[in-house]
Length: 115
Length: 115
Image 1 (cartoon, rainbow over the protein chains, first blue to last red):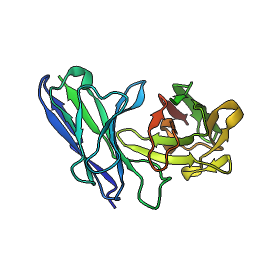
Image 2 (image 1 turned 135 degrees about the vertical axis):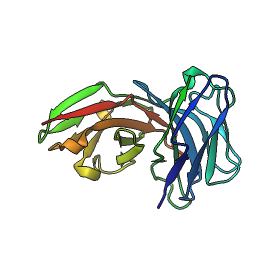
Image 3 (image 1 turned 45 degrees about the vertical axis):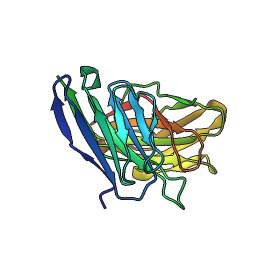
Image 4 (image 1 turned 180 degrees about the vertical axis):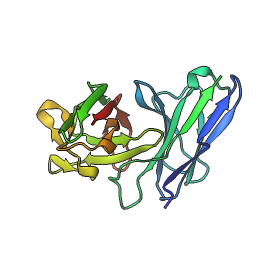
């Protein structure tokens, strides 16, 4: 019963490097979300997806790209990492057909440091 | 757009004492309301949620919350705190749209439990 799995759990990058964070869910959820968590700011929505092949911008999308090629996966990309993107990143998913009013399920997070 | 305020950044409670964490929201209609808990190094775990109906909501781990429309509040309570309750607590509000939850999180309240 894995739920939401994020890969990797930790990563250190140099400024300008690129990387992709992977989120996988096994609950057949339609909606998936990427958040970043910074001290004193709670969680802020970066991008989200309401279904396979669709993505949309959240509150803080600049510097990030996402893709949802498969229903169970939601990828978050940093094309050119900046120190301001040092954060903890959380993926979440929600909504199964027939069970609309269900809360978001969160992964354990990816701790990303940009030097 | 919705917003959430958690006025207390830190709260210290003695083990066995009662707890109340405050949450105030702003939203034009009846919102979805959630409380999540985050233990160090972990993802967010849902404690309880309010969608409709009874305004006193019971959650896991002995927590409850009361939705008060007149005060735009959704405070979290527990009658007797255990040392294992030490964590960060997030209140979140979601706009009503079947299945999809564009949540806005508060900045969190860190609970410390003293012996």
